Image (cartoon, rainbow, N blue to C red; front, top):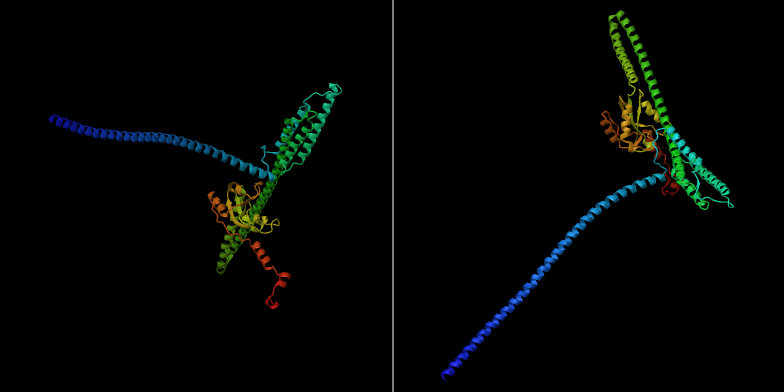
Length: 459
């Protein structure tokens, strides 16, 4: 019985131990599963981290590549922008040249200083043409022809074709070159090139051609003839300006000589009068001395003025570069802000201004400044150089009219060390009075009166 109890107790103990062990096993298994799950999650997170790190690395690589591409694009953009700006500048230059071409403007190729040099170069180009003709290179045939099996007859035919081609081309060129003017150079050039192309095209069958070397000589001749005409015109204008300046200088010299002669006469006259009064004074009574002394004082004053005039005239004659630079305007003739900056060596400079306002312009000039200078030509030239881009006539530099602000002219004069007061307002008396008279003379027309609905006494 006891053994049974012991066995039962053992079974109970074993069962309890089994249950306890099972619980522990299940708990351990659960922990293992939890650890496995956690490990799995950790592996997944680690894998995600690895992927993220890989993605970050890829993004960083992409970022570096993108930054490099941006840098390359910026560099490329900078280079392309520079090219664009250069092309744009060149385009503007070409457009300006094209516009100038439309208006007949021409950019000289040669820079000879005289028309004689152009003549020599023209002769040289024509001599080269003659040399090509003599050497039979002005027109050539690229193939040997036979006529009836005869090379000799073929050569004769070729020679005739060459002569006809040469005569036709030379005739065309001579006619075109003779018609070249200041405003049609480009058109005439195109006509020569067109003639060259047309004749060569017509001679394709016969294989007779004009070489480009001969064409270029003809184009050189056209260019030289055109520039020769322009240089000859400029020289003519320059000679006209020189003659005008010589006439102006001659007038100034005569004026100075006359002023000097008049001053000498006045001086002699006052000295003679003084001598006479002094003689009267020595014999005069006491009550007459006051009057005579007053006469002597007045005569001495006039004698001093005559001597001053004489010295001034003598000084002007000796100082060959002294004179006056004037700034004048003529609103009625040329409009607002147009000023003539010129120079005169006249003793009375306003005489020159009055001459400029003669019958060639409808109104008198207004004087804004009259600047005396010991070197008037230099001051005039300096002012012309400063305002060169403001010239009204950009072609003829001897035309002294400038579209410029008067305050700018005053500032430049003072910058050159000259002290002068400028008169800013142009009186333009005749012009303004003419405008006022025109306004006053505007009477109502017959139509205006007929359309007016007022009574006659109200008009």
